[in-house]
Image (cartoon, rainbow over all chains, first blue to last red; front, top):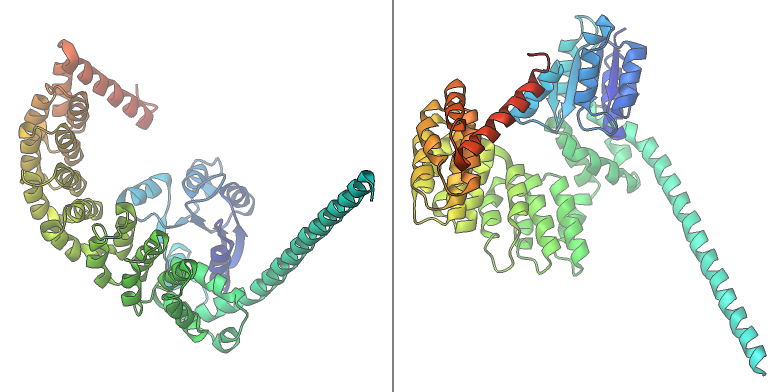
Length: 128
Length: 353
């Protein structure tokens, strides 16, 4: 079973994403700030991280950069899907430069989120 | 009664009142905590049902009669979702009568109720109440007017765009920032109205329209922005906004008109904006005008020209280096720009050198 880590400081959004992904047969863990998210990623080694950009303590970009420069090569390669209201061209550039694999921009559609998560995970990970 | 006795009675009364007051505050605090706990428990029970509803399952019947705390959850989620998710939540609010109550409150006597209703209708992203919200743009309360403007932006009905622009110069005005945010919320659907405002609106509307066209990177707006920039009859604020917008759009077609504004305008603020825009565009064809601009009396114009030359690539930097070799304020500005470039380069490529 593929494991997804959801990191978002808005508990309602974090829980909604976790609920939706849980229904796809994925194992889902949730954290509510960047620092806790990074610690959880190092401990859990998820197959995918859904990461909010604007968060207290460590923002999504900082988490992304920390992941990409991690000594553990497996963790450094973990796909990161940035969930963010920042949708301008320079924001996308900054996100990709920090190591994001893909973006879902807020306001978002849970269907689109599911499609992007499915595409980022190995084939057969998701049960629709 | 003796004077001492009166003092004792009075102090007893005061002490009693203080005790009663403290007990009342304590009781209110306990009651509020209980209410919050009760609401949190209700919210925790209802939230999964909302998720289930969003997942396409039937939960509407349960949610339609759920306590009012559900509306907080739905209104919190609504602006963060789009597409079918948003429609599901909008329908739920309609079913629960929330939208109908808010629409009725648009004409309430109390300003806070009108403002709250406007915000709520904006959050529901429904275009059904555009007319009512437009009426509130002229409300006697400035806070209600602002709430109505933000609601119109969130509701996403592009028909509101001309009314929002008109509110900039109405008898009861709205701040440009509030109108700008609302127009940005309307997204690219507002571009035709903004282009129209740029050519036929009032001066504040033209300035705001120019800024927003720039923020949208609207390539189709380039000809009208170029004309606005070149028009000596326009207020300098409008021309400056046009120059800034052309820089953001970054079409090389704007290089020539911006060079002319930099060279021939007598307004330092416009020359500064033109130089900055030329730097954003990065067209090497601007180098000669920028070098000439380095001789300006205004230090801000010189600095903007120097920064723009630094953004033109090797040719611009080479010209800056030549200018830095000389004497006087021009050389000093060029040296400052070269230093800033070196610092920026060191930050971007810390391992280089």
